[in-house]
Amino acid sequence: MTGGMPLVVAGEEPLLDELIRLMAAAGCDPECVPDLPAARPRWADPPVVLVDEAAVAPDEPALPRRQGVVLVCKSAASPDTYRRAFAVGAERVMCLPDDEAEMLTMLSDVVAGPAREGRIVAVIGGRGGAGASVFAAGLTLRAAREGAEAMLVDCDPFSGGMDVLLGGGRTASARWDSLRWGGNVTVAQLRDTLPGRPCGTGRLSFVTGDHPSAEAVAAVVDVGRRAGRLVVCDLAREPGCGGPALDRADLIVLLVPAELRAAAAAKRLLDRITVHRDRVRMIIRGPAPDEMGHDDVMAMVGVPMLTELRTDRGLLRPMHRGEFDPRPGSAIGRAAKAVLAEVMSRPGSTA
Image 1 (cartoon, rainbow, N blue to C red):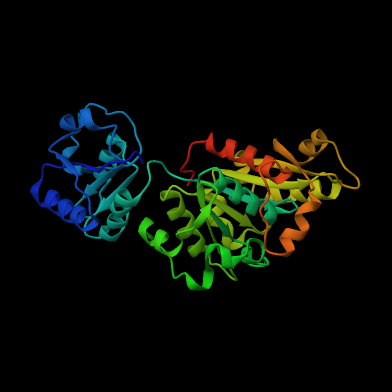
Image 2: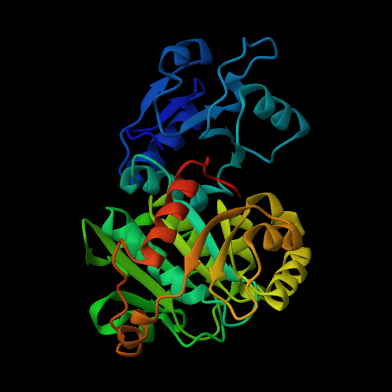
């Protein structure tokens, strides 16, 4: 999103009246124009453009492609509806009144949302004990300290709980069994449930607990992106309920100890998620008893190395006390900085 209010392109009064009613319910004050030629000077600026399908003429001059264009129709979509959607560059088609709830969620997010979408990072261990959960927590803390609204999402049903690692009493957190989320969740709902606590110049929050559902994970990750948060998802090696986070991630971080068996296990894991391979970057951990060279690990696993992560035994005592908070200059802090630079260099909206 780029800030501001929606643009409505509609000349048909019944649909225009319906859209204005929905805008008012969401707290929007839109700009309305009757046709696409009138929309052209304003086309690039609004966060969302709602276009009446009747406003798209067959010989309409092409407008620049942009995100956030929605074609709106008053009855069931027909093949011609989708032809018009393609012509105007719409990302989706919404039919009223069937899609009214979805449209209200979208418009509410325009009012409450940030200037840009958030980013999603999935962290997964190449083998058990690779340190994925610890790194995911460190990455979230580093992002918050640098000014982000950072949210850690525990997608591992067998984890020990991020509240144990981060100290749940000191952090604005929620547990999966207390979240009754599914489908469309608004940015305002997220802020009410997970406002976060100050951390550096940003804010930190997390969701943890037993037995998250795939639907709940999808809802949390989606609304976190729309809210402009840096969403870090800690995944089990069998993603299961964390599958939606993997699907949506802008960057997938694979932690691999520099050991032969760990590299072999990481290769098998990667073979199971091969559809996501182009978004995977590897962090190589060391030292290890039979340490392999970085080039050998990359050749065996088959994905690029992003950075290395050296073991820091000085973190063990704070971790056991629930006081985990690695400094920016620590090994985790340096690796986290490399991950943040990489994910912020990528375009968002993978899903």
